[in-house]
Image (cartoon, rainbow, N blue to C red; front, side, top):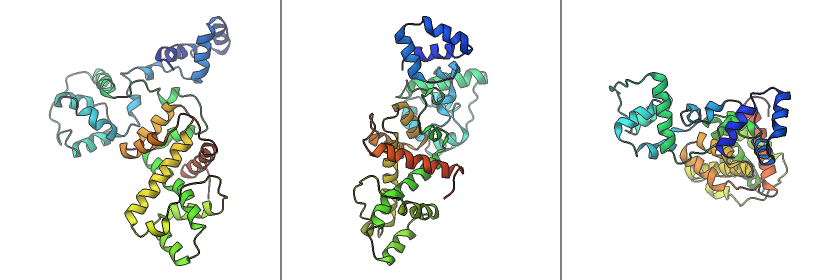
Length: 290
């Protein structure tokens, strides 16, 4: 949706219900269609500005490493003031910021933060992403409130659906126990849930009976399978929604999600993956029990 249409939506949403309906009646049909597409009740126009720091709140610092390298060091220091303390510490570890910042910034704090946010916005490759609160509603809205750690756990548990497909074919109990020992307690617990559910989607064989012998490789492939399932669940939803989820993750995981995301929902798979994802998010947030 065009940025100017979102600003107009913010204005419209400031009217009470009756006045809003009167205003909509006199608008051109094309404009009404754009407002209906936005499907947002937000009136926070400030979040749409490049000077707003809101787009940085959940952005993982790893996505900023390459853009920051484009700037001279004094501007990197200034741009970093818009980031969280945790992000700045990670950038120090990568030698993008000095361990001790002695330089004093003379701008007023509000002006400095606005300038820093705008600076980061200018060097960031994705400039027209819709803010979270302006996204249209989807069945996976709870994902937007998940932290990076919760999304990582989500992928770990989604992978258990892939693993359960193969566990069902194994008869060697010692091998099954050996595979289970490679899993976290949460994965072990959720694997039992998956084994009691009927398979609804055909997946490529995992070859767990061989993979588990290489512990690190096995865990990495499992996690990638979970990220792929997450991408399939996001397929068909607005790209901006997927963008926010991918950029809450670190750049390595996020790129896997973006790589497997499809503009259109994947027949059979997307609906199943969305239900699985919603179920696990409920568990992670403590709103459901195994």
